[in-house]
Image 1 (cartoon, rainbow, N blue to C red):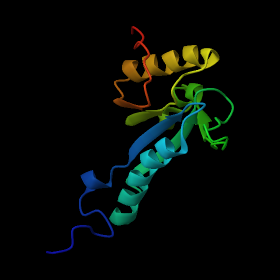
Image 2: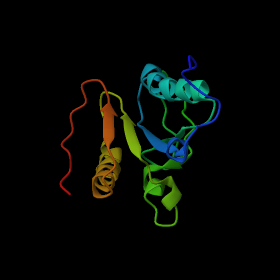
Image 3: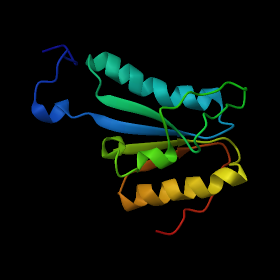
Length: 138
């Protein structure tokens, strides 16, 4: 068969959705956000169904603003992802989209988020330019 992708998955295991949480920090570049989102969106388009369920998450309760001054509408905050009442939001993968620095008021919330990722064994991938932070102890 020459068709690499089918409209519908052919076995139950391939029908499993992957929950991807993209944590967007204040001051991130638009390029970082788009290069994070677009591969997953294209994969979903090629597959013909939503294999990757993407959720944009802010560190704080407010929507972050990019380095270009563009607000990024997020579906929830970092606190909401690991809320006991919202188990369905628990991710299979977390991608951290950060700018060059993290604001002091966001650092504690980011460390809490990272601790929860570790506690729930969620793989994470930080995307940032020259960002250095110590991984908090579990």
